[in-house]
Image 1 (cartoon, one colour):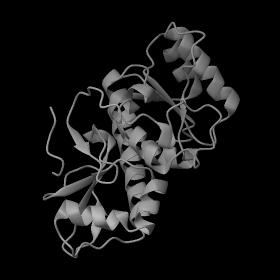
Image 2 (cartoon, helix red, strand yellow; image 1 turned 135 degrees about the vertical axis):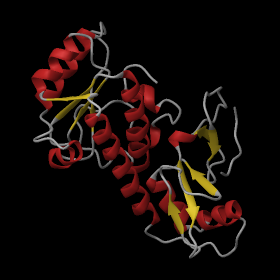
Image 3 (tube, rainbow, N blue to C red; image 1 turned 120 degrees about the vertical axis):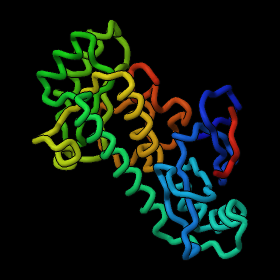
Image 4 (cartoon, rainbow, N blue to C red; image 1 turned 45 degrees about the vertical axis):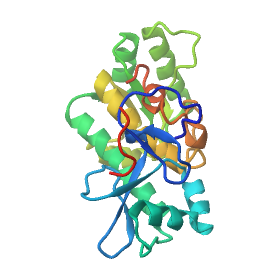
Length: 247
C-alpha cells in the first residue's frame, strides 16, 4: 500500500504508521485503542476516537510485532505508553477484512448487482455488461478461462490479459456470503458496485498476501506487490485533499 514516488492521488489519504507512506484511506486498515488499552482492528473506520493506520501485509506486520516496532509506532500514534498489542492482532485483522469483503459481496448480491452461474455470466460478458469477474478458490481452470475469454470479447479487449480474480475462499463460503447455492463464479454488472468490491477485496488480498490464493487465473495485483493506490482499478475493468494522519 505504498506511494513511494509521491504521485498525485485523489481522495482522503492517511499515512501508514510503520512505513510513513501515504495511501488512500480505503486501502489502509484503521486500528483503535480499546478501554483495556489493547489495540483492535476497525476495518470499517467507524469507531469513535483516535485511530492509527497501517498499509503493510500480514507478514510485514508480524515482523514489526516481533521486533517491537509495532508497539512503538502505536504508542506514538495513540500518545500512550500503556498500549498493549496482542500477538493475535494480525489474525484479527485478516478475519475482519475477510468478513468485510464477504459482507460487501452479500450486499451487492442483494442489491441485484451480481450474477452467478457460468451461462448467465458468459452472456453478460459477451454483451459487454460485465464490470468485474471473480471465482471461488476451487473453481475449475477451464471454466474460469472460458469466462475470461467471453469478457475480453465483450469488452473489445481481445489479446489483453483481462481475466477474473480467484478469491481465497471456496464455493461453500461464497455461497453462504451470497445466500445462493453452489457459487463458483461471480460476475459484477454495475460499475460502482465493481469499484466498491475492488476496494474491499483489494485491501483484504493485499493484507493476506499471495500465498493463501491457489489461483490459476488471478489478476496481477495480489499480495505485497499490489500497488496500493490502484486496487480498485486492478480488480475491476474500469475503476473506480490531504487529511490528518490520525483520525
